[in-house]
Image (cartoon, rainbow, N blue to C red):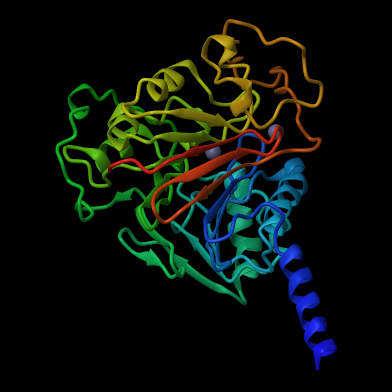
Length: 370
Ligand SMILES: [Zn+2]
Ligand SMILES: [Zn+2]
């Protein structure tokens, strides 16, 4: 009898060891994966249920990005993805999906509906590949206001297909003082369609808006703030200046932002100024250093998860101007080697710890009055 009991204990212990090296128990764990200026953000509830928002890049980056997402899924001890949200039909968001789906089962696919920005690759993917990927799973089109059925963690859709939450959430709805100085901004047809989510775990609140642009931020946040305040702002459209207006960032009052920028994508001076001047703001964490920030605007290296394959010993002080797009544009500094995530471990009391997997630097943000 004793021998039998000991055997059971050994099995339980080894299973616990396999199920995650850095996933924090009793926490909502959020892995912001480096997909080179695309998006892939994995949420894992305390009971091991999961939501993945986006799947990284298409083309040459798809295998690399799916592999990096799988490293996070393995760290969290996942054997399947319960919910996948594709925020919109750009290659840096849906691109790694076919590669990922070949590596791990996905139970429920969510998107904003048809592509509205005709593009050969996205249209081919939606006609030929996507239906096969979700054929044996559940596939739904997101609706504003709906919540996903994760246990213990509430995920509420607040924007999709150009629609925004029509009325304030409970406790929200105060006048937004930043609306008076709003400067419009837009860029293409698909970014404003982004599926935006509010993720709540006890008193902890985080948002991820995909690549939602300024004009939609205004619709969501003006004249009254329909969301309230948040602890963590995720994504930030890679730190692009067609998003991240003060009506959104300053009114949400995040304590922490985690930016999914690339080596030469986002981290733009205007966005950095907006983030650093936001009320209540404590720290910006970045998936990459960006040459577009220069030392003038960059966050300290402690808070940056990735460099480049051929890392220079110094960084220019002035931001490097974005080269004009065209066939002769040099590629951005490459980072195809080992990559590191930024992990947020959130507690139900609203406190949370952010960790940079590259250098192990970690900081805990304690409970504050809402
Ligand atoms: Zn990288
Ligand atoms: Zn994007």
